[in-house]
Length: 465
Image (cartoon, rainbow, N blue to C red; front, side, top):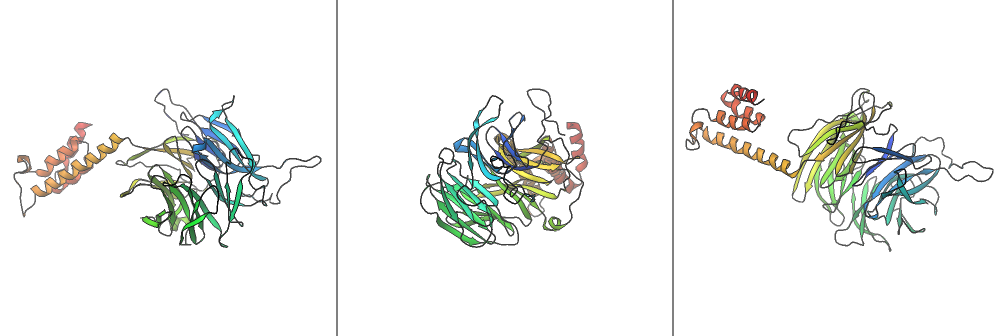
């Protein structure tokens, strides 16, 4: 179990729930978790865990309605008992998948700003999900930020689009959308940057995608369609900072404009399990195709190996207590920084057993199953401050300028003796010392090894430490 150190006091233990976490969501104040036993868990800034029984059977999914100040939870409750009868199931009691177990599907809205006397979030709304049509098997779901739209991807009925004030109104408008016989893989909402009354909805099927412009009333309009590879599962996300969707399929992560289609792509040949966004970052969790089909190992833990010059920093925060049997796989967590004219890998690290990646409390949280006892483990990856990122860029710039100076001074074709007097004998040693004073020992060694003088850099490093 990891120990979390708080700057305001002594270290404390803060475990995650030991049950299997089905879904997760994030807000500015809490990390929200739903497990397969129907419990709703919240984790605050001090990593204090609170638990509340929300559903009788299990959680299915969870979404944060930021503008409505609530968390929308979808799960299964037992049907109400009638006189002389017990709870009525739906005929699928023997199935183990939490999305199709017994009970009736409901959505429940909990406040993100109000708590009761016990410190638990206040329940704002509870309603049946499929009150107008027969019960469906839920494959995926999503909401818009003010919770006036709810899209539920089903196994056989396509996409069920609910519209209206879903937090307050007792009735809503249901639109069934099934363009073809393909199974729905993912659905995602994105607010329009030009029209506040319009939201874009991306529906990803087995071999195609479709973007719709959706308003509270009227028929959804098709904006863009495209065919995609069927070789790998399609994982989607929404990058609000650029107003685009992101889709992983085939051999890359594609940025899709709702109106114009593909804009650019990032190479990613591995099998993607998770794709999400955090600020201007695209976060993916992938597994190599060769290891995805191979038998996973029993040993190992979920751990992050931080990179020295990364604009993101990570640490292990807390873990669960009860061990459960789990077969971890070798995975790669990759975080891409995406600006309109710039895209680069900001962080990359091998991991195992990643279940969820959530943006909450201005931090990116990674939930995995790992450790010596195969517990739930929570990692947090934070963006470095502006001063730290600027310092990294300046250090690289100084190092590159030093390498250029050495190259020019030692060039046999056009020697430059006017650069500096100390460069006339051993130019690389002078630059190496300059890099050492700035603790750029890797650059110092690379420069001085060309003139067979690395021992002087090592001596300088020993003096510094």
